[in-house]
Every structure is written in C-alpha cells, then in structure tokens.
Length: 191
Image (cartoon, rainbow, N blue to C red):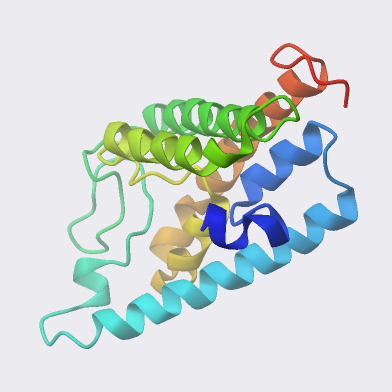
C-alpha cells in the first residue's frame, strides 16, 4: 500500500500515523481531520467486507469467531471479547503505547527529507510485521484506531466497550513520537 497510494496520500490509513505527522508539524489540522474521516469510514467498510467473506463459511459465527477485534483482559467465552493471551488492561495499554510510538517513529524517520524514500515502505512494513509478531497475543495488535473501530462496529457492545483503549493508547504513542520529532529529539530536519 505504501508504494501504491503513498504518492497520493502518504499512505495514511491509520489515524495514529496522521496524528503523529500532525504533531510533528508536517500536516494541517484540516488535512488530519479529513484523513481521520476517510480512515474510519474505510475501516468500517473493510470490516464489513471481511464479515461478508467470513459468513460465506457455514461454520462461521460472529459471536463465536469474532472479526479480529482487539481486546484486553480475560477472554470471555460467551462474547469472545478480551485479550487473545488473557493479558490485562495495563499490559495492553503499555504495549499499544510503546508499539505505536515505535511504529510512528519509523514512519516519521523514513519520511523525513534526509531519508531514502525508496526504502520507506520496506522499513514501515517490516516494523509493522515485528510489532504484530510481538503483540498479537497481547491485544490482537491495534496501533491503528481505525483498524480497531471497524471490527468493533460490526461486533457491537462487547468490542465497543473496550474500544477506548485502542483509540487512546495509539494516539498517546503517536503523539509522543510526533512530539519527539517536532522538538527535534529524533531528527535534524528543520521543518
């Protein structure tokens, strides 16, 4: 996706990335808000398409199988909501903040003027793969509020009740990364 739509939108398919870019001073507020609307609508439609595909299998049940929603705490046998590995709220929050911080630092680092843009997609993609390998059992890995919103809308109340963490924690991590670039802790770029 980075190479396909990157030239059009910077491949911002993640509200946390857009927030980090905005915090770093590389995007206007109006642009960020427009991106957020598109990202969230895209995630809801995308999760709906995934649900249509999944329901094509006779054994699929939204209640039993879920839709890749994120979660924390003990997994509930009835609602299928919670952490895949039964990790606590605190573990999930720490993971999501730190993982999103790392991800957005990579995005901001490889897209600054001094970086080699031809490798940006590879660096970003490999970072996201590593984050998923580490965190899939902790929260199902969000680092993207839209990615969490889409399935939660279709799942309903159990996932919506935990959605706040998967909005707040990635935004905090992204904001910290953007701030570190804005105050030039992690860059030598002038602007």
